[in-house]
Image (cartoon, rainbow over all chains, first blue to last red; front, side):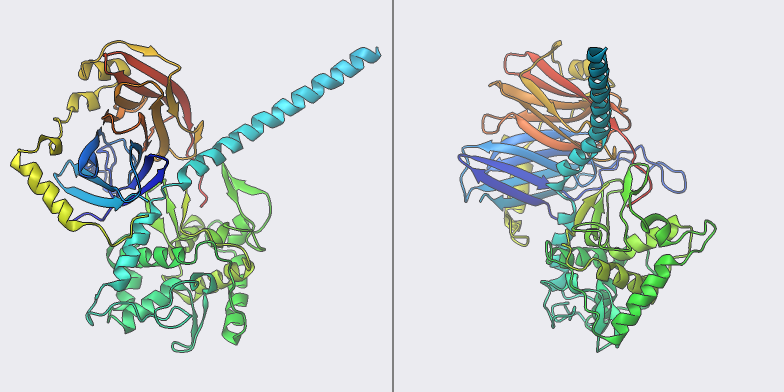
Length: 103
Length: 267
Length: 152
């Protein structure tokens, strides 16, 4: 199973800024290995974020998102103690979900 | 006559300041780029893994590293990074962080240190090693380097490291000093810190382990030194070798009282 | 800050199970738009997602460095102060495929996202906002990419 994400959700007023670091190669499919062969594409295609279980943001990504992707977004109407969930799914069908508590 | 002289002087002054400003802008832009990356350092991922692995029962002895003595007693991780390398009585030698982790992986967990030392960076147990080094370094983030030079072996290590720093060799006749032996040196856009003296907070020795965005890899000090030798087109002294430890002592002692920013993020 | 060990594993399993039942559409994502991610220009991307003609707007902001020391990781932000934004796209014009990412917003998030992109060379980068009424607004800026040399 893929390594866990690092999720930080910082509350200021009634908003929470969520910063996520995902552990993923994000292989673009353009790179060649030392033998000259193309390294096959392998990247996160779908990302979903939830706030206390309710989906608040979805994203589709291409292979040009950087390796070990970073994502930042802002949830409205959030307070400390709220649960922020992030799920990603990649081109191999692998998936990972992690949660954090807003503080 | 007077008026035109003043005018031309003003014009020159304006041109000069625009030229200075244009120059500043490029360097300033790169600094802005670096600042933008500080928040959200993928090194966090390795740090988390390192903390996890420290507690896991692993190896032939199925033991964790929680009794590992990194210099301040078994299991003490906070503050050890800024005191390494140092002399260890149980092995009777000066050791840096990675060689000491290797000792613990051997004695506590039963791993074969020769195998791990031979493993390429980024593969097998070296991935674990890097994650551990990243976490241990993070537990001293912001603290000031304070290496001991009290023990005779520590003093000898410093002198050996200094000698190695200036030793020229390889097809280019490079030494560490070729790039890092003087002020105001750079390769293209990379500033090269002068490591013969204290380069200040968060520079040189104080900036590794670091996540390198150019290849998306996490590098510990051992890999950093390895790559310096590769750039000099000189054979690598070996993972956790006396030579790399001696160099680390030289660099670490020179960084006395400077703050560590490890794990950092770099180009 | 999340305690590193406290990933709630059971919530991952629950979410996964709910998604597979097909009874909870909020857990199922819309089909991945492959064509949009193969499009080579802003115009082609917009055609692939069925959006109209783009108009440059001061109310949309594309944030990023003027110079990126390394094209592998370029921090980019897309935002708008206008209410009613439905989707936000980030594009790098000179990349082999122009679109980096597409974000579908709900009313629960601000129209303000940031990520990091790979850029093959210096290029204009775009933040495109698709509004609820179908209007397509964008902002662009140039990001120069330099490899930065051999040092640490």
